[in-house]
Length: 183
Picture 1 (cartoon, rainbow, N blue to C red):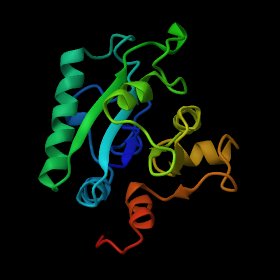
Picture 2: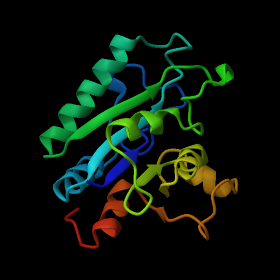
Picture 3: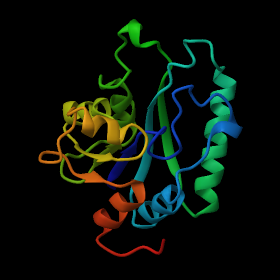
Picture 4: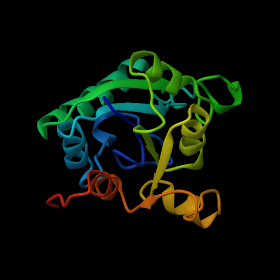
């Protein structure tokens, strides 16, 4: 079964420079729940790989993060989709851990449960760090312009010439499934 690895903030839900610190702050990007449902219905295993340094910064607890993820699971399920696994890095960027993207630790966690295949699997992110982690694991990457995606393009950290770029997760899903989805 093919795997789609999704970054969370900026791909599935609205991002915030102040971090998503509670379930009420977690707001899905329009079309993302529908996209995840369509990917699930098409047979893809959906996994999330997300850096959550707000934990190390003391902005929220693991229990709060679990409540945010519970809300995300509910919203996806309500649309007929399913997230199979969520891998998160709790560390501060200065910790230089093995799990924080662009390192591959989160993808290795996913790979242990759902072996990643370079021919069929994707990582979809809004930053060059997401794409670099995917590249290091040998899977294809796509950038969405939501979240930090536009800034990444403008700063030249991601090139449209070498990376598929999409308006949002919904547009990526339409392209991948090669069929129109109702908006």
